[in-house]
Length: 213
Image (cartoon, rainbow, N blue to C red; front, side, top):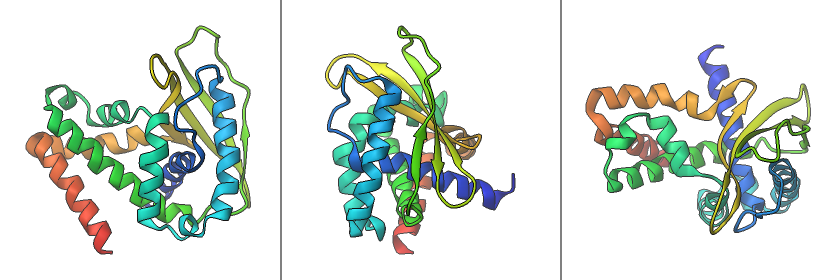
């Protein structure tokens, strides 16, 4: 896969993740099956995007509001960031972990802002769940149908206890490209060059460049 195609897929993947933020309930439903959760959220989001002009236009402030209010309760973003960071995450301080999550989130949101404009008349078909009732981690597979060939989007999800009990997303895959796997080598390059602080600096610089453009 060439670099341009890979970047396009990452944008679509990020849009799929970010789209869930628009319609997600404040807390996951403890008694809701993971595939039912994805089906509900993706069905709601398509209607929401069509009715919100600011989202359609990629308004960063609007998207950030939605992400902060909706997406975090439905995604284990700490696990997502830790997986992309690798072993260095364990040595990072609490402050460094917080900065990493914030900068990574900003990077994904701005990628999502551009990709959101591509969401038009798609429909989402959730595939039958291949899992046992006792499983604590599952993969929910979906097909996004619109113009052209359908796009496969898979969600890795984990069962969580306590407040907000239910299922949370911790990674997603678009036609073979897992979001965490895509960012892991990029993070590794910065980590090998200067550790966690170098990675934070790199992400921060990318976000500032995106803001300027």
